[in-house]
Image 1 (tube, rainbow, N blue to C red):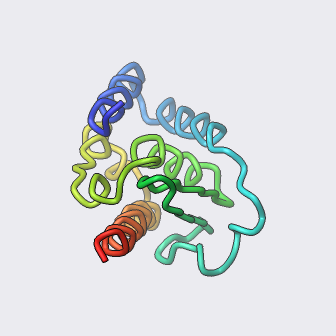
Image 2 (image 1 turned 30 degrees about the horizontal axis):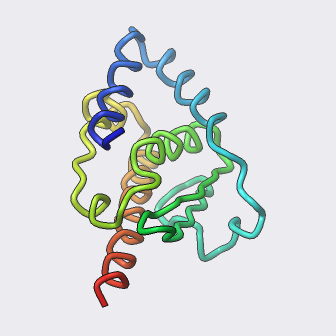
Image 3 (image 1 turned 90 degrees about the vertical axis):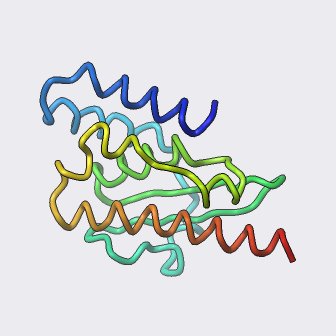
Amino acid sequence: MTINEIQDQIIEEFSVFDDWLDKYNYIIETANDLPKIDEKFRVEQNLISGCNSKVWLSGELENGKIIFKADSDAIITKGIIALLLKVLNNRSPKDLIDFDLYFIEKIGLQENLSPTRANGLLSMIKQIKMYAIAYNSKQNN
């Protein structure tokens, strides 16, 4: 599926919920979809700065696509990174540089997060883009 097809699917999944308590519960359920990561990825260099809770994100280039591994010590934050990876994992660096992440606005995620979680969300997206830029540069050299 394309990035936009997955985003549209997430928007549709969220549209069945009337209130944000149900949407938070769905985000928590999504956290359970995130595969456990090996302890070797839970290191300082993989911590995303700008998040109140701890979020580890690692990306490795395999066969021209970036494979991300992530985890968090907070369940809602873990659900948020799981949503991001549902859309952005296993994509080429170029796809990750050029993407338009519109599902966040469409489901009202950022406006329904605390300011610190909203900053954390932006930091997660920024870190994913940084991996994409670095691997894209590496591929073109």
